[in-house]
Length: 180
Image (cartoon, rainbow, N blue to C red; front, side):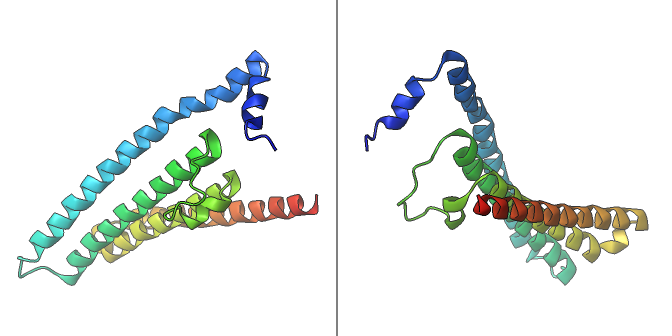
């Protein structure tokens, strides 16, 4: 088989389909912006870590205060993981192949990523992030009114239901594709 075949097919596209196909590259600045946002989260993580270390000098530090800062660090890491999934998975799915097939550091999930898998992974990551926020709120519940606690819980439950619905829909679609 000729390795130049995909390029030859692209060359045979009419002008309008070629422009439509090339428009995917308009997303490149968006992914670069997400990489910059990830850099901001790295900075945020180090600032929180420095704050945690400085708290260690405080003899009156409570376990709750320590736990809230550590949960903040976990939250930053989880959001950064979400950014990686969107940047790498989104680029691979919607813009261009990264050609990482034999790279030793290729994420395991990237080998079978598509738009549906990416949606499910993003939904579960959002649930994880929401869980951390909800846990931080419950640990510090005395600082919040009942209305805030209720709304945060309802929003979290909505995320969970949405993720289950997305996963179920993807399962139905995947089984329909297997039948054909």
